Image 1 (cartoon, rainbow, N blue to C red):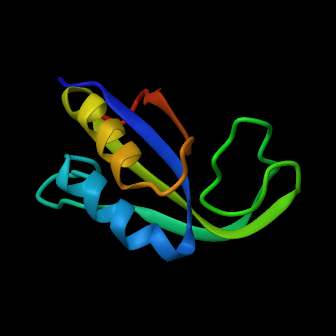
Image 2 (cartoon, rainbow, N blue to C red):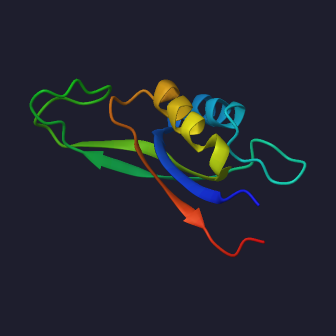
Length: 107
C-alpha cells in the first residue's frame, strides 16, 4: 500500500486556481476514482520581507497582510516530490509556505 501524505499550502487568493491545477496535474488530490480533490479556506497571511528578499508583494522591512487561501489535499508518496516541485513552480512567492506529513490509519 502506498503511503499517503497531507499537504497544506498557503497562496495569495489571486493564484489559488493556478496552484491547485499545477499540484493536481502533478498527482495531488487523488482519492479513489477522483483527481484534483482539495479543500480551500480563506485567511490572512502575514509576513515581513527581510534584507535580501525580493517579495512578490510588499516591501523589505514593512509588515504585510495578504488575503490568502489555505489549500489542503492528500498526496501519495510516489507523487510527493513532483507535487512539491509543481507547487514551487506555480506559486508566486519566492518562498512558498507549505508543509507535508504522513497520514496514518487512512485505510
